[in-house]
Image (cartoon, rainbow, N blue to C red):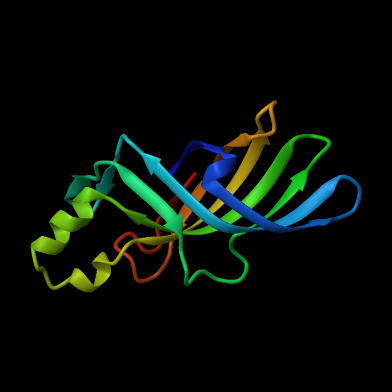
Length: 146
C-alpha cells in the first residue's frame, strides 16, 4: 500500500523531543488516529479481493520499540517517521461474519509504515509519503507496497 497522508498536529501526539546534531530533533509518537474516507481494493487470496470501505488507523499497542519514532530536520522542514499501526475497516467485519477457518487471520491488520514527510508552511501539520508493510499474523501478512 502506498500513498500520501496529510495530518494536522491534533491527530499526532509527540513527546520527548530531543535535539540531535545541528537542527535535527528526535521524537517519539505517542498517539495517532487517521481515517481515509475512501477505501481501496485489497486481495484476500489469489482470486478474490474486497472493497475495504473507509479505513481507520491507530497506533499498534504491541508494535516493536523501533516504531513510533521520528527525526525532524528543522532547517529543511523534512522528517522521517516510522509508525507501528493497526487498521480497521467495514469489510473486515463482513469477513469475520462469514466464520471461515481463516478467522484467526482477521484481527485488525498490523503494519509498519515508514514515511518521509514535508512540514506545512504554518508548522501545524505535514504531508507524509511512504510505504506500509503488513506484519505476520494479519490477513495481508508479508505484503508491502510503496
